[in-house]
Image (cartoon, rainbow, N blue to C red; front, top):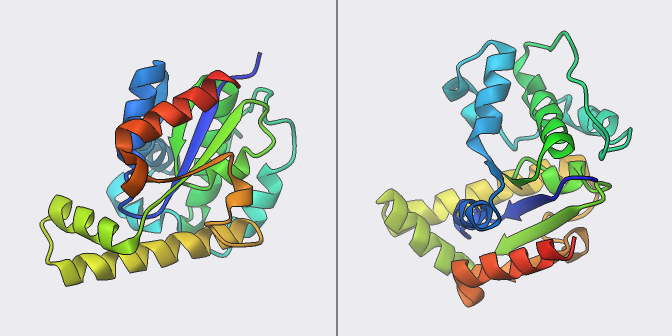
Length: 206
């Protein structure tokens, strides 16, 4: 039987990590986020801190890599290649291989990194998009990062644009296109706890 995979895409500051952590605890399954970067860095022979700024960015090979990874049955076992590239542009390729291998091996909550699109043919995928009005997200980011509101607003807009361009490099259409997801939630309205409950309810049907 295929494994349950919940892929969370999110606007910056909407609570993606919080929802993901709580959901993984509720369901008793793996939470995959920063550990994907750390594993990719080890495979590339790099320090993960050097690669942090390259995640979810558009690079020259990413569109081609996504096309390659879209082939094959995502519910089947994924074999990691013996030799991996060492260039910075290949971070997405390696992370995508890790994501697909994770989906083939175990139940998991995966945050970001285009997982909702890379695993779109996975038979037990639940794809979620978390969003919220910009002022609400700016206040959360300012409080959590101890930033002035104007700096938090700039950061929110920059990360949102970066993620949007990244998703558009993988697929046609906007990052926020509801047709790409099974569930879209405004966390400023439903809250973190209710978001977790709703996603868990959908997951139970998969």
